[in-house]
Structure formats: structure tokens, C-alpha cells
Image (cartoon, rainbow, N blue to C red):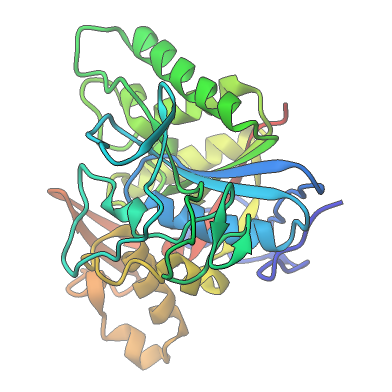
Length: 339
């Protein structure tokens, strides 16, 4: 049995999304959680991945009566003086929701996580153990969002194997503390597939790749969700197509999730952030897709000035990428681990 979310349709997707998909795929259906089970949705690379984690956690929870759904973000070590430490590499945010100020990039902090509604493992918005969907602070300390600290970044003398061993141990021990039965791992952009450019010496030391290895090693059933492939500006079009083709050839590509029905929960908390943050790029793409053709042809947001009207120009952290607009409207679902 599969719990159907409101955005799930039973028809196959015939669109290949401008060459992103090697073949037509069906709409992915979220795996079911039985009453009493515990699931977690993890933002793999930190930053705005937590907004995707929150959106999917709310969708998963809504279709899993009696289950507990947590959400979390993977972050580098940083000062967290007001947070509660639950395990050596596991923390949770203070109970009070602190809205973001306009223009706050939140880099190197937990301000983005602290701006989000508190979820399971406490009381949020007067509803025990449920994910809140508003800005009101909880009435007592809550659980989600949790912070999974990824301790090694590969910048020191340690080998890739040593870095991976340390990070895998940290993440799997944190998951054991949370006692989860299933995982959704969310990456906005897809450097978890391609390796991206955000690493010190080896693409396998990038945080998304390190989290991917750890989740596979945990042997907890896990589905990997790549939202808006290319929206982080870290993967060339050819590299992304090759990575998706490799996943499909391995039998792990499960289907796609159109993001339009998730627009509101995904972008509700990203308005104070810059237009080139990943949820806002996805929002621009979805609004463009819904606009009349003549309006879409004019270009807008990150797509302004693109050499071709079917490509979105993304400028982030010194990188420039030209990504098909259609890629930014969909998520890929990939089987990471059965058990």
C-alpha cells in the first residue's frame, strides 16, 4: 500500500523535460508510513534544502495518519549556544520561531532553521506532535527542525575514506538517536548526483555526497529526492543528464514529482531570501510555466538575459549556469536504500 499525496497522479509523465529524463516515467508516490512509525525528511546539503524538507514532511505527514514525521537539515559545525544537544552531532533549534529579516542570507548560521514552524516531537500551534504550517511559535519546546552536524569537510589532511568514515558515523548515530523507520533525503539542485562544485579537494567530500554515503550505510529505507535539478547552478547540463541516465541504468530512478502543487509550502518561508536562492529560482520557473506563452517569452527573474528563452540563467556564488526552465519544475525520486 502507498500513501497518496495530493500531488500524486496515476498517469505516466510523457514529457522528458528537455532531455533530463532518459525515458517516460510515472509520477512518484510517497512511501507509506504505518501508524506508530517514524519518518524523517532530511535536507542533505544544508541551507535552503531544509525548505524542501519541510514541504515534503508536511505532505508525508498529511497522508500518514498516526505516524510521526520529523524534518532536519545537515549543517557544518557552527556555534549553536542556544540550541539543545541531543547527541554528539545532533541538535535541535530553540523553541521560539524567529522570522527572517529581508535580505538575511543566513549563511553559516541556523537562522533559516529557526525561522521555520516547529514540528513533531513537541507541541506546535496547539496540535500535539504535528507539523505547524504557520509562523506562530510553539507553546513549549518542540522537535523539528533537527540539525545533523556533518563534522568533516575534507579540508584537512584526512583522506576521502577517513572523511567519509567520520561523517557516516556521525550521521548514522544521530539517526539511531531519532529512532526513524524511513527517510526522505531532499537536495535542491542535484549536486548530490553530480558532485557539484562545493567541495574542498574531492567531489566525494562535498556535504551532499557525504550525506548520501551515510544514508546508504544506515540501511534505513531511504528515497532520494532531487528538486529542480540544476537550480543550485553547480552542475552542467551534460553532467546532470549523464548522472540521471546512470541512475536510471542502475534501476534506481523511481519517478518524478511535479513541483507545482508544492509551490506554496516550498516557498512560503523563502520570500526574505535573495531571488537566486534555490526555492525562489524554482518559484520563478513554476510561475513562468503557468504564465501565458507571450509573458514567459519575455524572461523574468534569474532567467532574464538568457541566451535562449528555454534556458534559465542562474548566477550563484560565482558560478553561472544555463539550465532548462522545465528542469526547475520537477523533482526526481531515486531509490537509495530498501533496508
